[in-house]
Image (cartoon, rainbow, N blue to C red; front, side, top):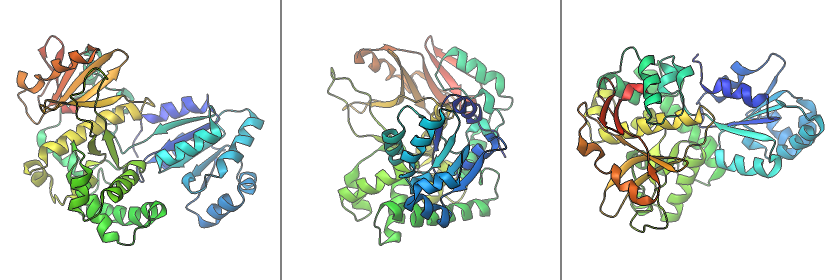
Amino acid sequence: MYQRTLASIIKEVNDNFPVLLVTGPRQAGKTTLLEMCAERDRNYVTLDNLEARTLAQNDPGLFVQTHKPPLIIDEVQYAPNLFSHIKIIVDREKTNGLFWLVGSRKFHLIKDITESLAGRVATIDLLGLSQAETDEHWERLTPFLPSPGWVGDAKSAIENPKTLTETYKRIWQGMFPRVVEATDSVRNLFYQSYIQTYIRRDVKDVLSISDETLFYSFLGAVAARTGQLLNYADLARDTAIDNKTAKSWLSVLEISGLVYLLKPYHRNVTKRLVKSPKLYFLDTGLCAYLTKWTTPDSLEAGAMSGAILKTYLFSEILKSYYHNGVKPYFYYYRDLDQKEIDLVIETGDSLHPVEFKKTATPSPRDFKHFRLLEKLGKEVGHGAVFCFIEQDVALSEDITAIPVSYL
């Protein structure tokens, strides 16, 4: 059982809000985390239990009388009618820490909850284990910015930097808690079961899909495009569906926390930026399984090697924000001349450029496009190039090469 960075945030939220909502993909460890943080008198009920779900859906008033706070309600997305009844209790009791809610469909949940529990609920996101959590440095994981302070803190915590081989083993393995230390056969069985369960439970609850094989092919096509610009027409053509269906199916993957659509950064003063989002699969192990890379070595040497590394580093940076309860303002830059920056982090009036490179010898060509941000009307802050260098090195006065291990 791994310590999670979010544990301290949950305790803080519990002291300041009557309702906490934790969202994220299935098997990310949401329930385990809350059980670790829960005080002894906190009750637990899951709407996976059909009897509890039926009561919550058909008689939510009786449900909240039967299951009294402080309470964890798992899989709460099955009974959105509960939220108005929770509001009644919250307004009557005027006590913090009453309800901890767990759900696997972020956007639908947030919409329903904000309408019923505005000002009463704090929402936080949990993804799979972060690199820092698996390395038992969970307490030092802070939201990444390529600043000298962040780099110095990371450097002091890392004893043995991961090699390229070790990194791709981790990328291939994936970061769901059940697979981090699993054997290859158990890892494969986990992802096989995960996909079957996901299609049968989550997808069929939202979409009317009669052909599970077709949706599985769609999952594979999405995974093969990780780290790339999203083109709905190409995605639809490759899976023999129409554009509308492709958008609908992809929205379910996004709602479920399996993919992230990274938007381009643009200001009204410039019209040369491509507007398509970039697609990132948020667990590289699931992505590698869907794209049929059978070993870490084949993944590292194969056609997806660079894209899967970008995906891994992006998801680790995203976790550094999510797992500290901080909203990220992430973008990418790409113009019609195909000049691109992998990640742009916006903080106030500054833009911080970040590149992901599969190299141990970073050079000026790796950050040659950073200056393009100057025309966007904001200050360009310190930038970074993540790569397989052994220790951080200043590439210029305001750009640092950072080892992959520092995340």
